[in-house]
Length: 281
Image 1 (cartoon, rainbow, N blue to C red):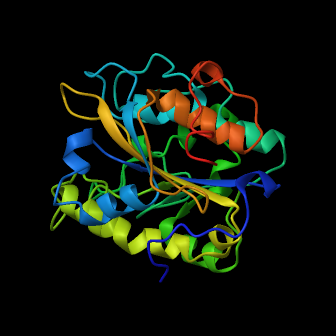
Image 2 (tube, helix red, strand yellow):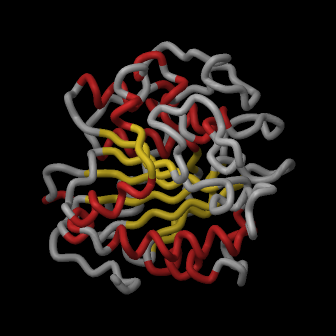
């Protein structure tokens, strides 16, 4: 496994084709993670690579998860403030998946415990939650979804082959996303930190990361019932112990991804602060 070292062999600007892998965890504010002894691995990653200290989940605190996933993939919440399924929210309009489709470029949503490709409902155990996957809500992806949404078990094969798509959205199940569920033997911060300690080194060992092509962002959908100040980690072979105090939000995350992938910014991403310069991406 790759150790926690961002050693680099090329400058970010010399890489022609960038790839981005976004991991979204759940419902933790900044102090729940940064400086918390229950998250030793994440704190080591934050120190070694990059952390944004002023990141906000910029949608109303009273709104649940779904709005965050739509915002971070389209630049708008589409007016959503509930967690209803795709049959209740059929979203028209552009999104990062449709942008990549139009450019004939690959994307993939790796969802842990996905019951079926393009699942439109939660699984029976309540650990796969469709509201965390975004893709099935977009009308533009009604056909592409069945091929682009895969179980997380597919990820090791793509990593080993250097075959990650241009954009990967990685979604842990409810037992590993720090939210928890009744079916989980454990949950919370420790479970999520352990899950990330299992998966992040495998991603860092992959051919795309070693080639300097891959940027990894780990963020959270929202904070607490009163505070949407969330942690966000930025990992690349060119990011060395960076702490950025610049205010960022979910629009920044989308805009940064689109900038790295050379896509036109959507919605609020057009005016959001980019992370590219601060984190040497």
